[in-house]
Amino acid sequence: MSTILFYCILGILVIQYGVDTLLDYLNAKRFSTALPDELDDIFDAAEYQKARNYHRENYRFGMTKDGVSLAVMLVFLIVGGFGWVDNYAAELTDNPIVRALIFFGVLVLASSCISLPFSYYRTFGIEEKFGFNTTSKSTFFADLIKSGLLTTLLGGGILAMIIWFLQQTGANFWWYAWGTFALLTVFLNLFYTKLFVPLFNKQTPLSEGSLKTAITSYATRVGFDLKNIFVIDGSKRSTKANAYFSGFGAQKQVTLFDTLIDDLDEKEIVAVLAHEVGHYKRRHIVLNLLISIVFTGITLYILSLFIGNAQLSLAIGVDQPSYHAALLAFFLLYSPISTVTGLLMNYISRKFEYEADDYARETHSAIALISSLKKLSKNNLSNLTPHPAYVFVHYSHPPLLDRIKNLRA
Image (cartoon, rainbow, N blue to C red; front, side, top):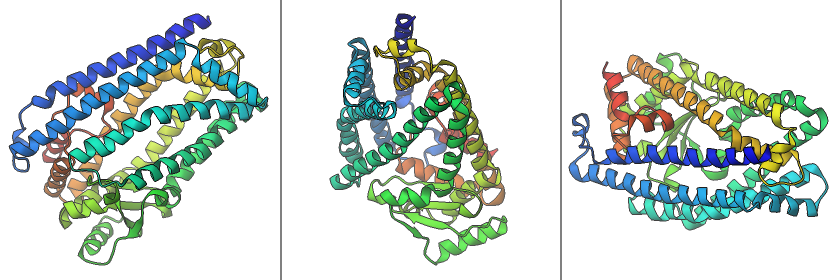
C-alpha cells in the first residue's frame, strides 16, 4: 500500500507541474496580442511592449524555478530524503513534538536555501530591470530574517499544537485544532495590521488635507464609520501601488500605499476607497473569513481519517511511522483537493471584486474607478490579455478589460 501511495505522490507532483506548465504556456502565447482599443488612451506602443517583455521574462524565470523545485522534490522522494531527515531528528530527541519541529524545521530551512537565489534574482534582477525595485539589500535580508522568525514562531506553534492534540485526543483532534484555528484566524484578521505590518513597514495616519476631507466626506455620505485611514511606505520596496481593507467592527482599517497616492488623483483615490468600502458593505470580509474557517475544518476532518495510517509515513520513505511524517504525506496527497478549493475561492473572490466595483460605481464614479484601474495596470505592467484558462485557475481578481466592461454595463 505504501508503494502505491508513493507513486500517487509522484504522479500528483508531475501532473500538477504539467498542468501549471500548460497554463503558463497558454498565457505566454497571448503576450503577443495587440493592445486592446479600450486601453490605447493610456498605453502607447513602447509602454505596452515593455509590459509584454516584463511578462515574458517572468514566464521564463517561473519555468526555471518550477522545474528546479519539481526536480529537487522528486529526487528527495526517490532517494529517501525525508527518511534521512526523520532519522536525524530521532537521533536528537525522543519527544514527538520536538522531533516534529526539527523535521519540519530542517525541511523549511532547506527549501528557503533553494528559493533564496530565485527570490534575490526576481527582486534585484527582473524587478530592478523594469524599474520596480526600490528594496535595498539590507531590507531584503532583514525581511528574510523577520519572515523566518515569524514562520518559526507561528508555524512551529501551530505544528506543536496539532501534534499535542493528536497525542491527547487521537482522531478527535480535529475538533480542537479547528476551534483553535478559527480563533487564530479571527484574531489575525482583527489585529494583523497592528501586530505584523509594523514589523515590515511604517504606517502613518493620513495627514489632514483635501484628500482626507474627500475620503471622510464619502465615508459619511455612504454611512461608513471610518476612523482608521493609514498610509504605508510601500515605496520602501517597490514602485507598484496598492490599497487594502482589513479588520472589521472597531478594528476596521483602510490602508493606502504611498505609491497609490502618488500615482492617482484625488477622485481616483476615493474611487479605490469606494471599492474597498464595497467589500465591507457587501460583507465580503466576514464571508471570506467564514469560508476559510469552513474549508479548514473540512481539511482537518479529512486529515483525522488518515493521520493514524502508518502507510502514509512509509510512502515518503520514513521507516518509523509518526504523526509529523503522516502529516506531510497527507498534504502532498491532498493537493488535488486543495487545488479544487483554490479554484472555488478564486471564483468567489472574482465575484466579490465585481460586487465591490458595482458598489463604487453606484456610490461614487465608474469613470474614476476605470481611470484608476487603467493607471494602476499601466504602472504595474499588468498582463492586459491573460488566457481565460489561466484566469480561471490563478486569478483572484477579474482581468482589467472584464472589470471595465462590467463598470460600463
